[in-house]
Image (tube, rainbow, N blue to C red; front, side):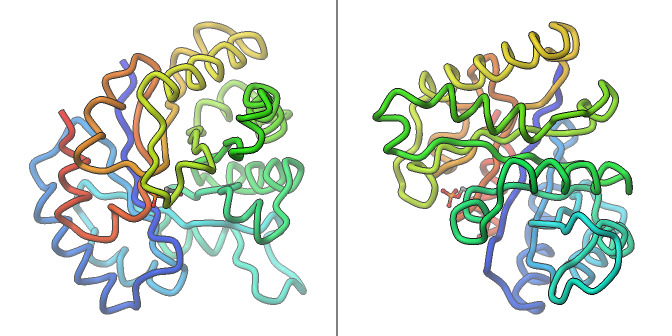
Amino acid sequence: MRTPIIAGNWKLNKTISEAVALTTALKASVADVNDVEIIVAPPFTALAAVNEVIAGSNVRLSAQDVYSEDTGAFTGEVSAPMLKDVGCEYVIIGHSERRQYFGETNESVNQKVKAALAHDLKPIICVGEQLEEREAGQTETIIENHVTGGIAGLSVTELLTCVIAYEPVWAIGTGKTATPTQAQEVHSFIRGLLTSVYSADVASQLCIQYGGSVKPENAAELMAQPDVDGALVGGASLEAESFAQIVKFG
Ligand code: 13P
């Protein structure tokens, strides 16, 4: 019922020529895949070039962040209309690295989500607990804050335009993947939250991705969990072959 969504978050990696080479190879490797939504999220500087490479293909374009205002005196920021203009269909919002290093809060995430939706961009809203929070038994409280804060005030139609990505911070870039059971527990908790805020019908339609050390070796077992509907991939998306293997998890 829910189409799997596999996205590659390239983070602070790839020059334009490297991005074009990676995307060209990826496009060829996944050309025959038609049952998965495939997304790449290059850095801002490579968006235009990658958009040219993926034209007419089954690969979609995402940015890694967006600002909440459309225009104005906000030096260094990039707005939703600009991302739409360069060919983005998706935008990652509230990644834990933005929360950790750049002061992103649930409130700023919510403002960015609304700005993206206002310009027909599909937000990929990231949520996730840190190791100390998990060890202190606070995982569900943190996830509830991130989810309800991020989607506050959205209509059903707006919510269903979003993707939620559960990324436990302790699993990002550490090689320490959440076990399929740990991922499923949190994904099911998120779907339960959405059921209480919206309805079971709405909750059942929303795609919830898992992120954190997803690799070709563990993608299938994570994706086999009933509430895991996709993956947000960092390191393993930087090479066409490993990302293509994840896309073809089935
Ligand atoms: P890694 O796959 O490198 O752990 O990164 C996950 C991530 O943060 C994707 O947004």
